[in-house]
Image 1 (cartoon, rainbow, N blue to C red):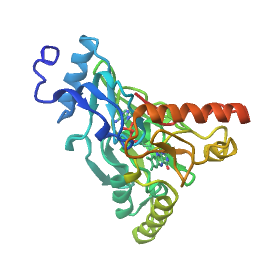
Image 2 (spheres, rainbow, N blue to C red; image 1 turned 90 degrees about the horizontal axis):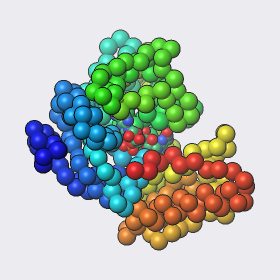
Image 3 (cartoon, rainbow, N blue to C red; image 1 turned 120 degrees about the vertical axis):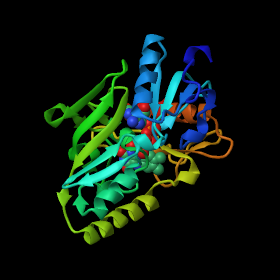
Length: 292
Ligand SMILES: Cc1cc2nc3c(=O)[nH]c(=O)nc-3n(C[C@H](O)[C@H](O)[C@H](O)COP(=O)(O)OP(=O)(O)OC[C@H]3O[C@@H](n4cnc5c(N)ncnc54)[C@H](O)[C@@H]3O)c2cc1C
């Protein structure tokens, strides 16, 4: 592997990406790496910058659609323990960018720290949640974030805190290459009460959205406060399908990739829904799922 000579222990070629995404469709990554430490990641990113290799960061793949042709360049998966540490001290929970959001929420709840529990049931990692400012039940992750540490495309480590941090609907100022870790400043509360609240949010979420084994993705963003599911249904797309990809029966913002579905099926279904909503309602539906 000439290009990645010296990195053979962490870089693989032509790694299929479908198993790393919730939709479970799409082609391979030209290069794929699972670094085991921040130093190793920094070296790898610097090497890519020097050699003009494009780098992307993969979280849990719950908001990713990989095209059939796959992706060129390097995909980095922050799956190692070094990126998923979680700790709590005082009112603050600190978590690695690769940590599961659900683990961060349950740590906070166990420590009697309130704020993140309305996000119970949102799949994905801390990095993915911060990148697109995940929200649920009137709470977004950004409102509790007090600091984020990131890695730039040239391999420098930078921080944002306080006023530097900006969060909006499905958007944040954390747009460097990789979110390495974040701090959440939370509020003291009774752990038992919080546990019940978290469980309630989780149960409601599980019953209202497609489950992991349906291979779902939340395809569309809401538009100016209008629920995307309502727009999709008003445009006559409830239950619409292309090939084996279909609009979820539970929530029309979601597309599920049924057995045999391809990435092209999902893409064509997205385009079909966007066209119908535009024609019928004059509204442009933007995708929430990231298309690689
Ligand atoms: C069943 C289901 C329910 C969902 N419910 C909600 C919901 O209630 N609210 C909500 O907001 N979303 C929801 N989503 C969408 C999704 O769960 C979130 O967007 C989630 O935060 C994505 O995290 P991830 O780790 O899976 O990111 P991925 O899908 O892996 O990546 C998404 C984007 O984040 C970037 N990214 C990932 N990790 C990092 C990192 N460490 N540093 C920098 N960039 C990174 C990727 O490059 C990519 O651009 C739902 C999705 C599903 C399938």
